[in-house]
Image (cartoon, rainbow, N blue to C red):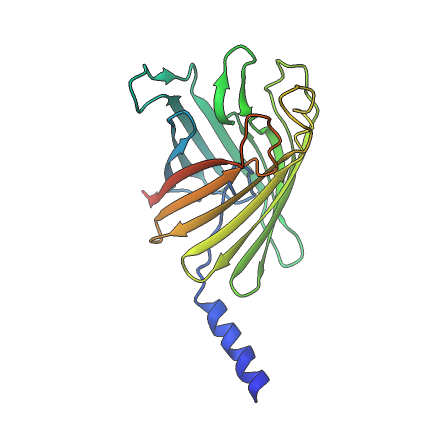
Length: 244
């Protein structure tokens, strides 16, 4: 009876966890998309008083599109360092998830992480560029998603242009918290003297205050792959979802 009661209790705990579809982990794309009529607005705070504002929209049942723009030194007594260009992202899911098969999507994302270096024409952590991604979700005391794929960044001014492999996961904890982790091999960023060739390991805690409002507390480069990273690179992102 005790075992049966424990089993029923675990099911009840899992049943209160919300179901949702992530279109991105931290910077890693998943096969999740915004449905037609859904939109997302985000604001990301990062080092050097940086802020990136972005929006994504579900234009068609299997296609979403978004733009980002930002600057550094927005707070303080220095002139804001506005980015030279607007970054774009788009994703098309061509296979929906089934009990046996993962969802598959192709996409493009030109937004990297951190400061944009105009001389090298790249971000601290390069953008994903063109990618193919797969996602599979499971029920285990709530939702648990496994994601992975391959990408080719177009930030190749440094002549380091190999394709990458990325993978990640997300796991709900109750009805408010989601933990996320991701790893990028960074094979296209291992020739510079500032990096150690360890790849980029990132983690995040997402707090879902409501169904529409999410605070993402993220920790980039936990392995300290870049020599200028101490401990990790910490960011805050506020995300608001809506329908129209």
